[in-house]
Image (cartoon, rainbow over all chains, first blue to last red; front, side, top):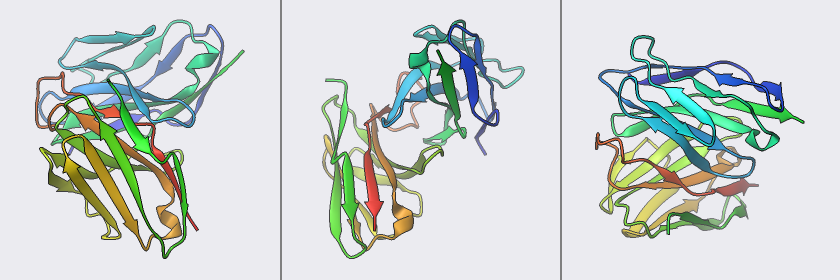
Length: 110
Length: 118
């Protein structure tokens, strides 16, 4: 079945540091891939998406590239801000559902 | 209007109470979803309505009863809940159901209703 794996554990980093959150997936066919962000006390917001291999999604300085050969969709940002502190979920669309990864809490320290 | 609005934001209820969560969208979306999210976990799909008909029920206990009165509204009726049902309940909508492969059909989530069952 479809599944998404995110790296374990929270991510703590200093302001202006480089952020990477790993996401790999298992799926049949060519699913659409997403990153959602959840700020404290809020629902999920779509951050970016990619619908086919080699597509790059980008938004608010975040980027992720759909890599079919490595079945990955890693999220990156070159210089994080305190306001980027949130939980980030990788997700895959397939079988009429979204399959979410476990999420990574990102804490950015001033 | 690009929002999904959920009410109430917070709800505290006893195990014998009957209450309802409400969700509304005016984006013309024809698919609506209920998710349950426990702390520090990803959302778990509960129900999907497509064109106002229930299309997916993820084996949710009958103490949760969804209703879609029209294409803009989605309710979740709660009765005889257990303390372990305490969670954030998220509503979402999309243009059509997720069987569409256009890639443009994404989920828009509401802010959630935080439910506490005493």
